[in-house]
Length: 149
Image (cartoon, rainbow, N blue to C red):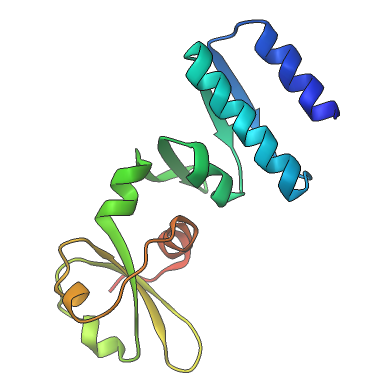
């Protein structure tokens, strides 16, 4: 309730930019959903912008238009969310030799049982051979923890 009151007070001032740091941290799933709905309503109704710093990627994926990933003070990724999700795919492979010399492979991460998660761009020929997923959180993990060939 305190969070909702703070939001109402903030929105009542008619600001055009809101800067929120971990705004849904500590909220239960229902309260998080309500809070994100309030943010979206405010943007639509008053045309304001919201800058959110958060580790809850599902929240960002739900409401953000643009994503900026910073790691150790460096920008790792900066683009519109739709571009990121449309231009990058994740596949799983069992043989690391299969990605050597293949254009469009960005990075990979070892999983278990000789399985690898591989981040590729949308033009990578491996997409014709493997099922792919697009998951913003996994994509971010691969960009930070993944190894380059």
